[in-house]
Amino acid sequence: MRGLLAAFVFLGLALGQAVVKGLSPAEVEGVLKQAGLSYERVDAREFRLPMAGLEKVWLYLDYCQEERCGVLTLSAGFTLDGGLGLEVLNAWNRDRRFSRAFLDEEGTAWVESDLDLTGGVSLGAVRAFLDLFAEEILPDFMDHIGFEP
Image (cartoon, rainbow, N blue to C red; front, side, top):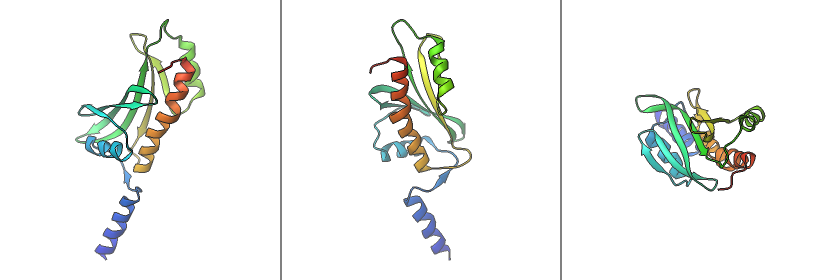
């Protein structure tokens, strides 16, 4: 019986349907490698990725207890000549559901998106989160603010 149970667990993992409630930095590296994404590990819980024609997109691990982190955050910053008005960022925040935009202290416009793992998500959902940010959120935000990479 144990052998059959182990086979089902292994099969679920092999199919990418394992549910995780947190990831270690090493597991995040595994997800990035499996997704075919290049990256640089900047520190223990921070990665830099090229995405959507940008050289620097940041992946942060947050809400960590020991080596398991419950939140993944993707973010990218944009410095524009002449700056950017808050009305442009407010329009983004009003019209979009899965990201947020803000200005930092230096006037850089940022777009961020979080994935909360604490309730349990599949590794496929983590991959979909990465794809959504790279293929939809970043290009749409760059268009919204008039940024050309």
